[in-house]
Length: 281
Ligand SMILES: [Zn+2]
Image 1 (cartoon, rainbow, N blue to C red):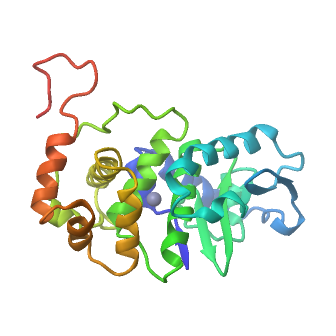
Image 2 (tube, rainbow, N blue to C red):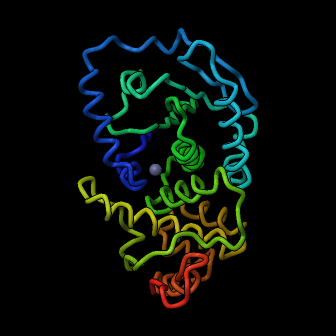
């Protein structure tokens, strides 16, 4: 199965303007020479990755960054994907965005990085300079999808993207047990939200809002409950249960409304340090 990073991801990260600029640049440069074939690149082998780098010398700093991201993701994901400890992911590190867009993965013009999990080969394609949050986001998708792929299943979009955003945010900062995620100015009704994903042509602000809620809801699942239940929840979904059924059987919520009520009570109402009286709601 193949997954690519969506334009929604980039818009959700507030980078739509720069992405659009990059698209025009990419179109402008499209007539240029094709990138050097990936098969002729040098490789570095780290503990958990084979890094294929277009820049001839490679970069110890890039290799170290990837390993740091792995170390951040491992505690959360290893119960789902035990293979991550001893099976290396192939990382294709392009010299720049233009090379990445022309490379063998044929990414969409708006893509900031992509992963592929197909036929036992697990690949991440990114470019220099590495954007740590993009790499963490796509690596999370790669590991998480491989878990569902084992039973030819796929995670619901809110869980898939919520986990990727949640982990991209904490990948390079030590987890703070007091952190309850983003302060949201409102919310999409849970029953609607759990069955939704942003439309391809949705405005950036709508997409961003959906991703923020996804991250908050996933954070609530992981930090607001016994941590091991998250594994049980994913296993239930992978075996074919609907979200409402899995929430009921694993977390004990009678229906999405009960889950919503608990989430609304848990999520932060104000950013840390915000003066009383300026709370959003
Ligand atoms: Zn994503």
